[in-house]
Image (cartoon, rainbow, N blue to C red):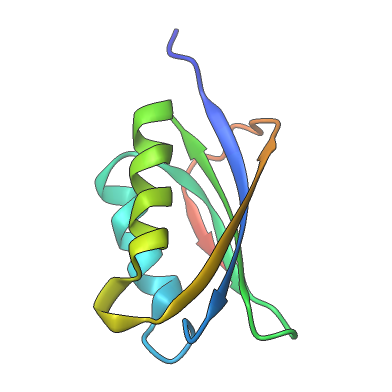
Length: 91
């Protein structure tokens, strides 16, 4: 059985106007990572990504680079307990 890891992520910067949530879902699905993502009232994007360590790290790197000029200011990552997400949910 493959080990899964999970990370809680808060991304700040101009990330909502470029469809960041939907791009994140596509990127995560491409590398086999599950979880959820939502915009917060504070103007950040909050997500949990879960899957094989290599896939989770690839998605975190994608977030830090900032897709399509998203002007990502910071990515705060906290380890969390994997919950066995079956897919990716946008809230």
